[in-house]
Image 1 (cartoon, rainbow, N blue to C red):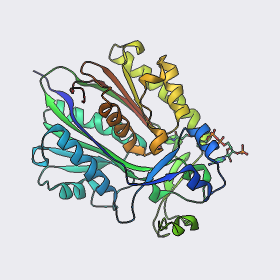
Image 2: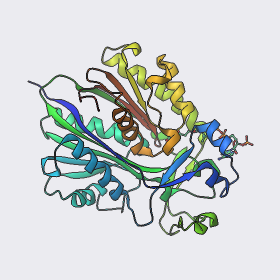
Image 3: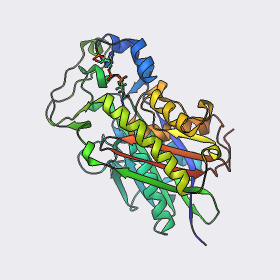
Image 4: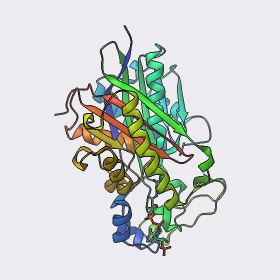
Length: 341
Ligand code: UT7
């Protein structure tokens, strides 16, 4: 009998501190109207000074383990998708393992920026199918606010912090992850990147509210993006990959019950839904509440659908993301977890 990868637990975490569009109007030359119209974003959550990516990951992971009704001792492998690791090394996954009280099982990070969760789910699925692991904890966690240039209005309004986690279990039962498609094209690498070191400005407005957004100029990366060009390629590639994955596994777009897209920009999300002929009420939309949380965005959106009781066993769920690199991809899932609530 062959193994299938089933999502058996979901969890999410967003930091307490909320930064609204109105807050940003006091930092850069922008407006709530511009941000909402061009991106759909209304607010984003910002990590506390004393928090690290691994702390947000630990919250989301603990919730996913509790949801699966298991504990860390039942996990065989831990993957953290992040582009904002606690340190250059060790991997945030090993720090997370220790924070969760785990030991011995392998733990590693993957870096595919906003597509990290999609890449991670593909990797976990293959390893489970190969019989290497039975239960994998997969977390997407990001402190994007730490790699923002707060003087750059074209990027600082877009991103936010958070974490989402799933527990994946290999079972002989049919369903679960049907398959994945991954792509990358490094010829686009300069359109969206974070080099270091980079000099940062600290908006005074934040200091007056007791938030310290300052970053040590030495060795800190900051996001640079040619937004317009990224937008155009993202719409094209995402439109292609959702069609490609459905064709590969023998489905039609009308078979898809839920589209769970990367939450970067509501206009990109709408374009992909349009390509599939799906109405927006079958599309997970959380970008307005947390902005672009990079690798955390797909698991945050998936968790939101699950918590709201939208996901039911037997439904076809399509995940997709597009990221710097460029790296993009999609996963197709026959949902098998019981409905929440
Ligand atoms: O997660 C990884 C993938 N990333 C993405 O998917 C992001 C893709 N890109 C986007 O979402 C959009 O390109 C943005 C939201 C970043 C920008 O939207 P746009 O409709 O492409 O605007 P634009 O870059 O063409 O800029 C239009 C105008 C410019 O002014 P001019 O040159 O027309 O006078 C910008 O300077 O909007 C200006 N602008 C702003 N105005 C107010 C740029 N940022 C802002 C801002 N507030 N925050």
